[in-house]
Image 1 (cartoon, rainbow, N blue to C red):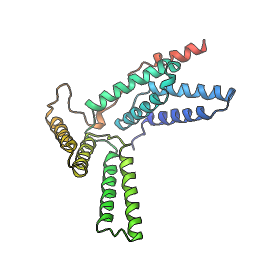
Image 2: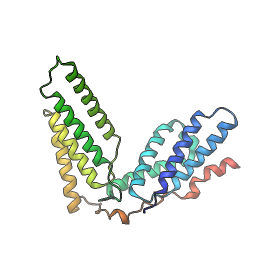
Image 3: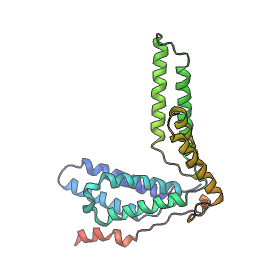
Length: 237
């Protein structure tokens, strides 16, 4: 059985420490909560990812944290800057080393399927709709809400494999062509989806190489641990 990526626990610890710090009462409790929060951040930005899925989760979490704490960036010192570097590195890796397949199913694929199913149910509910029939109207409205919710959920999920990335591009292309027929967006997205597949199989895009199998990938820590701990050492002096 594959061991869970330790970065996931570090992310959960950091988020829990953040939440606790937000509601900590003034005084000693706030001081202790802030210390735990800062230490969790220092651990997070210096921990290596063991899986592509873990790397994507870290990228998503750090993007959220950087935006959330941008007003206090200076107070976090090297931890904040290290997080910025990790985001830049992980973003570059996500583009050039996206795994062909993962040990775990790509979450974007069932999300796309659910969005398509919800959209189909909504279309069926609108077919031959009798607007004077309250039951039919309520059913159509419920289907519309479910479709909107499925699409909203889809936009919060990142692909973890290249197959998922291709599927997402093609899905958006189909949606754009169907619901915005007078717009060229669907055509552009279809071109992009085709380009992604061709360049991936032939290596046409220079400067990138085909990704290794997920079992051979490991995103390593790129920030020296000593650098991230410099801020905590400075506080102790």
